[in-house]
Length: 270
Image 1 (cartoon, rainbow, N blue to C red):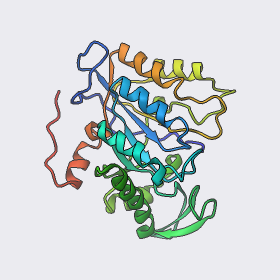
Image 2: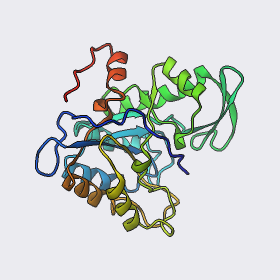
Image 3: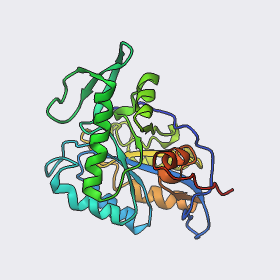
Image 4: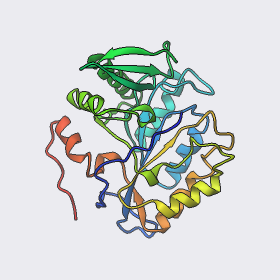
C-alpha cells in the first residue's frame, strides 16, 4: 500500500471538547486516524492509546491479517468492541479495501480491491456499487462495536476523483484525507525511512488542526512503525501543547456529521 498524500480540508486550529495537553490544559488539537492493516500490532497500539487516554478515529476495511479471519472478522470482534468501550470513533475504509483507479463515463468507476474474493481484479462499478462498498464496511463496524460509525470514509491510498467524492457525498459519506505533515510514514521502507527519522519529522512538522494517518500494521515494513514511534509521538506532541481529538470534533466535518445524523451542529468554541 503506497499512500498518496491527500490534503485534508478545513484544518484550521480549533478547541476540541475534552482535548488536553500534558499539563491538563486545553491543547492544540490534532486528529489521529488509524486505518486497518495486518493487525499484528493492533493490541499493543490499543494499549498505548488507552495508557495515554488518546481517542482516535479508526477506518475499517476487512483486510488480510497475520492471525484470524480478517481485520473485520469474528476473531477480531472482541478487540473492536473494546475500542468502542474506550470511546473511539469508527468510519469506513471500504469493505474490501477497494482502490479507485479511474472514472468511467458519467457515473461509473474502475476499481481494484486489495482484499476479499476479487482481490487484485479490476472491474467497473456503478455509483450505487461503490456506495454499497462504503456502507458494507460501516455496517460491519457497527455490528462489531455496537456504535454507529461516522458518515465519513477514507478511500484506500487516498486515491479519489472529484466525481467519486461527489458520488460518495450524494449517498451520505464525506471523504477524509490527511495533512502532508500528518502522513506518519509507516507505509514507507524502514531502510530508507527509519523510525527515529519519522518520529523527528512528525514532531517537527505537525501543526494544530492536522489529521494524522497511520495503520494497524503494514506488511511491507520490516521494522514496524508501531508501537516504537506511537508512544513517543503521543508524549512528544502532548509536551508541545498538542492534544488528541476524534474527527467528530473536527471543524471540517462537525456540521456534516450533525447534518447526516439529523442533529443541530454543535457550537464551535473559540
